[in-house]
Image (cartoon, rainbow, N blue to C red; front, top):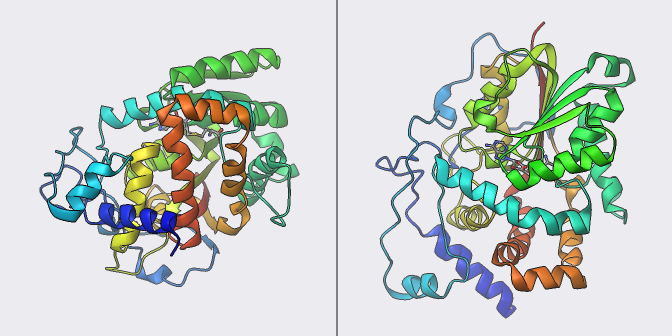
Length: 383
Ligand code: SAH
């Protein structure tokens, strides 16, 4: 085995060994864990499925429990022996984020610090590209294709475009999607992000492109959105769901602000679907914990879990797709983009960005082992 792979594997295994706060009944995070078992009826779900909303909601025992606690977990006791040594030398200090402000502040600080470099290299979209052949070289075009494919998948064709007049971009980054959707539909768009830097940058870019009357931005929490119910024809969440510590509340909020007949589109990182009673392996848990501690993510859920939540909230025309194959060229391209001179300069000065770059390898490992799935979940609020 090559030495780099050996070190990576040791670190991942060491993290997998940690007491799992999400499986520990004494932990405030109990029930928020990755052990989210899908309803058995969808065990052999094809990669693209459609469901109509069931009359009875899916069992809540198969889902992450709604949070009532805002506390953060106590740090695990220091470990002895070889694993303790690994902890000491590990450059990636392991963190498990709770459901409270520590996570939110971490997300805000992470994007405040890293958005500039990302924008410099990739432009105004902070999300994966959609690759039809895997050979495309224009990554920014692939990012726009991701938006178009997500809209198409949700059932918004040319005929439906005139229905979309009010859009909310939940976790808007620097407003790439917001401006795209404002232009495409001639819609009024509201974008929210946790990062004040992103919010200011979104406003500046929107002003520059003459869209300031159509797209507005604010710092706000997706789990308690500052919008009244039934406000939007399209509720858009492009790669923000993975940051949400309470997925049930997240989906509930998305559905609450959707207008009757409005569409909800969630494009997000998921872990693989699990059989009933199945748990992620120790290796998989370790790998996700490493990624979480760098990208400020709470525990992951599967696409099946999202489908169950969408059903629970009464969405109709629920569809999911696994686009892991379609996004495959993305992370190697990100890795290559880190090797240009400007990026190396930032890599040398920012530890957040340095860790982020290292996490690219973990993401690639997650995709290649089938653990990480790139999911799209769409649905419609009944009229
Ligand atoms: N959708 C954007 C950005 C994706 S990056 C794009 O595609 O370009 C993830 C975004 O989610 C960031 O803007 C981050 O601030 C936002 N986010 C994460 N947790 C959030 C929360 N609880 N409330 C609002 N925004 C959140």
